[in-house]
Amino acid sequence: MRQQATIETVAIVGAGLVGSAWSVIFSLAGLQVRVYDADPGIRSRILDQVSRAMNDMVDAGLAEGAKEALARVTVCDTLADAVGPADYVQESVFERVDVKTEAASRIGALIRPDAIVGSSSSGIPASAFTEKAPNRGRFLVVHPVNPPHIVPVVELVPAPWTDRGVVDEVRSFMERIGRAPVVLTREIEGFILNRLQGALLNEAFALLEDGYASVADIDATISKGLGLRWSFMGPFETIDLNAPGGLDDYARRLEPLYRSIAQSRTDARGWSQSLIEKADFERRALLPKDELPARRDWRDRMLLGLVKHLRRSGA
Image: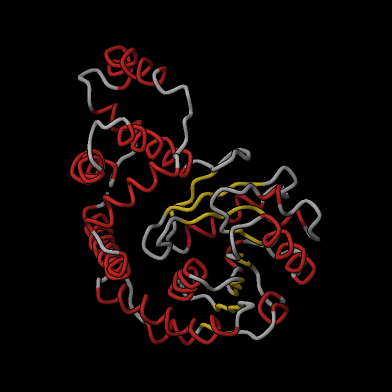
């Protein structure tokens, strides 16, 4: 088994928002990065995207050496040129089973037998698109959180046939480059992050549909309430600190309430088109669609500042 410290050359396959962010992460970590996208237009823009993101991180005090890092990024004209020399490949193609299946098949045929392939899949398990891929034992899901170059957590989800030791190797590698890996013992639809986010979104949409509060007030409950705690601790630690006797004390006090709430939402009603339109109407009243890009930039600046603060505070 190759030692994780020898992962020095990585390939990015799919250079959209997620793929370009991975390029930032790997190059700033001192790795050689080989980028490929089937779209020539995306290939022509990738270096500008990576450079802007790097400079934002440098300006926020979260990175240095952007010029040197950018010089480590090579844009490749063919998939073989990108993945052939790579110790590790990060696949970030379109989130659709057929697209990922084709990508896995092509990548698997071109990698070295000891290389590893991580997929940025946000909810599709690796077993759905790697079963027939060459070298399938070297594939797993390595799912980042948007925007990946700022938010450090990554979910590692092996397929049933992922080689023994691959998950440990990728976990060590991700820790080495400053990520916060979360390891799942086996596959589950949506993994951890989107299952937790989905539960919150389903309740938020239900509260909106039933007329209990507006989109803005539901958002404020998180941004000015729960989210402040969740920016530096998870749900189990939160409740552990929220009762005099810790988690078991909290559970004795409030488990009946939460069980009752859960039982009141057993219909799994989904998000109707009319409900989506209502939520979108309220959001567009707060933020016109043409202002979305500027607001995303604001989000990233806020996250950069938060990450900087959390690093300095040791959280």
